[in-house]
Length: 252
Ligand SMILES: C[S@@+](CC[C@H](N)C(=O)[O-])C[C@H]1O[C@@H](n2cnc3c(N)ncnc32)[C@H](O)[C@@H]1O
Ligand SMILES: [Mg+2]
Image 1: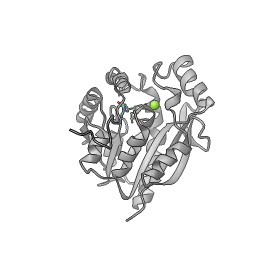
Image 2: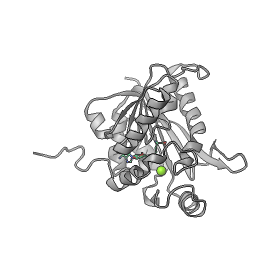
Image 3: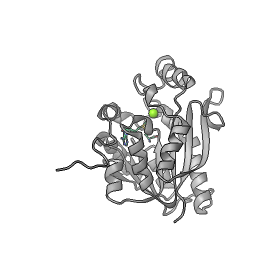
């Protein structure tokens, strides 16, 4: 049997997934190993909601502002974003290659009474099945995949014409090495050691090239920085470390 020309190896790096699976019980503990993601949640949820509402003509102040929009949260982990987006009315498909993560996500969503369609699968399998979405979220995932070009092209293929893709990741700068690896993993202990490899960080320019290759046009760029006084993350023009890109697929 011939191998798929699209994906002889696929997007999954088994060591990366094993690292997250080992921590699967920690997802919903705000003081645990994923505490930084909990801290990211207010700023990234506002960013996602506001841009999605602007694109699809919704009222961002409505409690069901995302009603009926089909959203893919790829690399959803324990569902820290899937759940609040589903509460706003989105039809969320949460996908992760880790069975353990999906198990944690399902148990939590059931306990909260929030409907999320969690699946243990990959971007390439979903794209192959012809799934499409109004919005695809890639939040803190691209720096953990085996083949970022393949991963983003499979994700872009699932965005409907007129739809959006969000990507949040870490820039490949010396400042990111100092803050996101030495600072966060070794000095402050915010993240387990070995969470990130500097050479898998990606510059905004590289990300934009991958997105453009997938037919996506950049619509917004924003840095995300930590404010120690407020103990919260905020949007910023500084994209040297953490940042988000928003891309849209032109209408047919
Ligand atoms: C840092 S966590 C981010 C979780 C979630 N997106 C959030 O921001 O709260 C990265 C997640 O990506 C998943 N992951 C790793 N490799 C992946 C791949 N090739 N495709 C999809 N998800 C992947 C991991 O299992 C993990 O749950
Ligand atoms: Mg990360």
